[in-house]
Image (cartoon, rainbow, N blue to C red; front, side, top):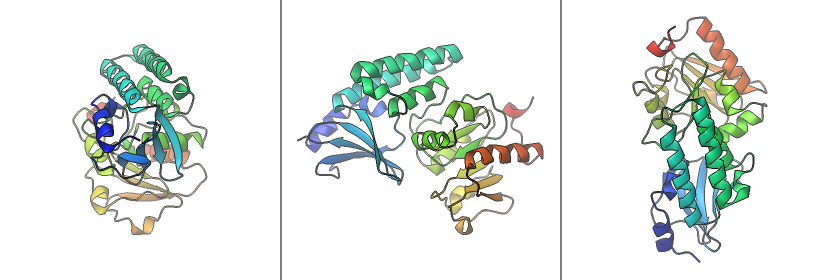
Length: 283
């Protein structure tokens, strides 16, 4: 059985470089059999099985577990491979990004072939790297390469949950990026909104649209983010308790395809001149 001391020793800087958006915890770790080592509050958890050493993530909404690594040592190998690919992605063109994506998947297969299967944590991370989307923690602003113009849209879901939600509508991350310049949660909603205001971080400038899927809320402080112009609430969420400031439009999307409806809504409001243009949006 792995002790807290052994787990802490195994969670090196390389291990912590895996693209998990939550916060790493300090011992004593909760869990007699499965140590809770990282948490994205209310969204997901990262755990280590004390007997087998297996590292896995759990989506709290549905309890679904995703294998991350067969052991803490292999977690460090995978984290190092991702960190290397991420570092080399800076300034890379589309072809170079796809080469990095393939290289990361190859490194993952060396550790455990099944980890690179479709719809797994690492296949999604590699796809996002290839698309120019990174989630390297709250200390650095997230980036997004997209052919789409328009205002920056923050979708209040972490990347894995967003990938799954889009798939339910027959959409992919890369395909949706052609419709909407979006960013998923990276270190919490407040931190994600703040990251969009970093000069040059986004072509569309600071976030002007916030999308709240069912079951996701926002505080009055988060809704008061200065550049927000539109808050879209998906059906099933309670919009009546949202303290939306004056001047910010609140729209409830009740249909069966909320992400498609969101893209259409943003396009309509953009055409109507609802959003301010940042220098990167002007043609």
